[in-house]
Image 1 (cartoon, rainbow, N blue to C red):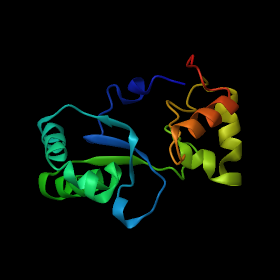
Image 2 (cartoon, rainbow, N blue to C red):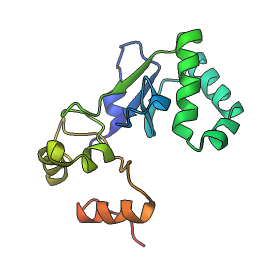
Image 3 (cartoon, rainbow, N blue to C red):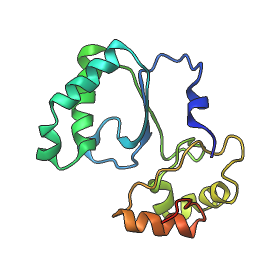
Length: 155
């Protein structure tokens, strides 16, 4: 895969946070549907304050049972009240630079994309990372990545 940092170098589009799209359209993740498995943060006072507030509200993770829904709640507040600018790369875009489990598990519509991605993951402009989200546990993640020839860790 390509180095994801190169994607963000010298990017001057005004966003403070960039998220991989989780793919879920549940209301608790709205409107950004951020996947916390991969995101990029610009160092600034706004983002430092955002994460300091998120850490202080860690009890919402326990209450909601989801770090993504807790992050979404704090994110929405900071976008509204603090002017934080957020970009989510849309999962349903077949040229998404940050594919994930949504693409892997979404069936026929993304099969050609996944085959192209896994047959040559270093090809320019295909993807920067692949995050195996939407997968029940780490055992299944490992199995799926091994099946695609993308498991590189020695046991």
